[in-house]
Image (cartoon, rainbow, N blue to C red; front, side, top):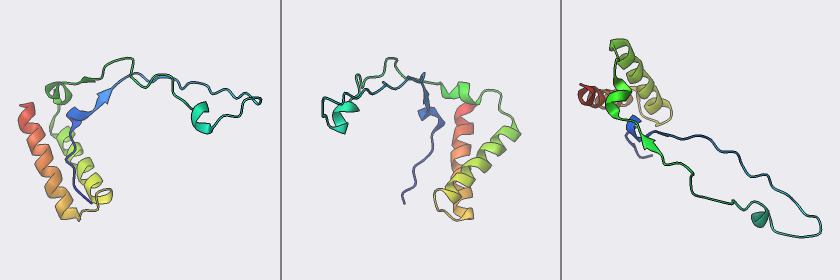
Length: 102
């Protein structure tokens, strides 16, 4: 398993869109692929990145500690790292984010 640095700045938000309802014509024998064809694969709105400074504005020590603990837990349980390695990697990420937020 390869470690990939988590970057909150990569997160994007966009409004959800409803799926197209599939219709089936019994007289027409089509494949599943043709029934499930998506009308438009391009998003209707552009994704926008939140500015990193905005993401961390107003964070206090408790917020940073919670972010560290959450990231360390993710690295340990989902990433398969030992507790020591997960905490070391999480500390490096959080320290980097804190230095950019100042």
